[in-house]
Length: 159
Image (cartoon, one colour):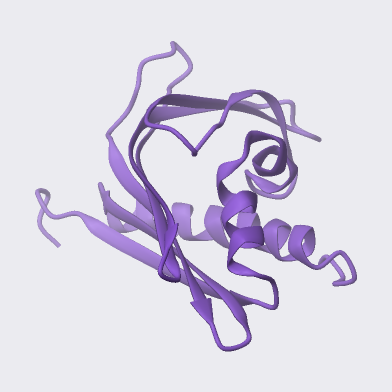
């Protein structure tokens, strides 16, 4: 991989819920804060409303470590479900300890109706390195486990 190359990651989840239910889970602030962010972190302060374009931000704190993490960006597109498909696009950048934003990447949440419910495709593009892609993969997989449980409370969260 060259220094100028970027890396993309994508995740697909199928849920036995109506398309509208999945859309609300990934766009409405009161629902987003229930599952957004990796396991082991709690949301301290967030402006998460993926129903409209404009700025967004989220601060999370490690439950055991107390470490603070801040991420922000711009919601660049919102297309509510029409004809069985909807999407949200946003920029993404972590802040360092001084509050300075790091390299910007791009995230999209796409929801689609399926024969058995709805599908979420989460894509994170233009990550700066393989290491960054691996870190984000771990974070997104952890976050998606929380979404799995949020949409199916009968499911058991891993220990």
